[in-house]
Image: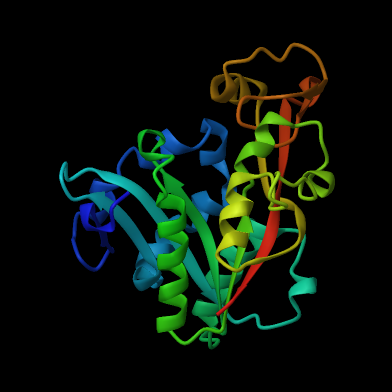
Length: 251
């Protein structure tokens, strides 16, 4: 997409920022992804504590918001090989805890980049990652990390994330489109974070979120899931533990 036809804006640019983003997340993610307990607890902290690290993209012609991105500064500046298995949940909670404790941030981490389905395939993923990198540089960070959700993994839910990230396309780049975008912009794929997000719910909740029926115990592949859902009917509990992939942008 022509950069002249889009415009970035942030929570500090407009008091109606959340209103302008209304419905975007639900159009981009499977319903169950909107019920991560860490996000439920801390989401308002992003705009409240870190407004300068959140941004969205507007179609300058229609005025419609077509993409949004969130990131969070953290105190961590350790060995990238030691980034934890808890991934997304960890970095979200860590950023908020660091801010509350007054710890100086040393690294920026991505939280999400979401692009409206109707606006995909126009190069916006590259534009959004580049803008996040630019923010990190402007704020003086030398590293941007990202617990990436590999978007095509949902087509292969029975393949381990460890195997999946080794898949290549004909050019020798990552098979997965989101991982490929990061790598083409200079990122290094580090390692999976196998417990990036943990979502629990009752049988009724999961049936509502997925449109499926769960009558017996077992593992179920679910629409949009990167791995199977573990259902324990006698406990009225469905557990989904999503893997992501740590990537590192050295700026």
